[in-house]
Length: 109
Image (tube, rainbow, N blue to C red; front, side, top):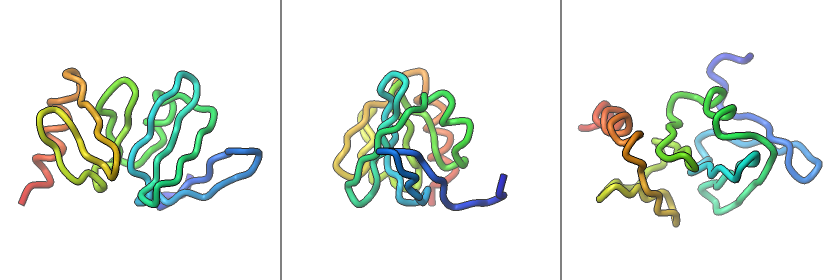
């Protein structure tokens, strides 16, 4: 494993696509598949579970719901249990809320 790597490859549509972590906004779980949303509004779907994926992502990624992983560096705002990431509005599940609050607390000015 390359330490401090900034990207990963995913297999989608029979090809390998390079994704930079900083470009990922949100990852949505769809059963045994995940849908990756990027900051330039692209979407990639490939075979992987959120549970397996979260273990391989860098620390700026956090699970905030059974169906969502967000990139904390790309959150625009957080209000009333909702995160705004680009055009997506994501509900934060109760079980993940405290963890998210403490992570965002470390990033406060």
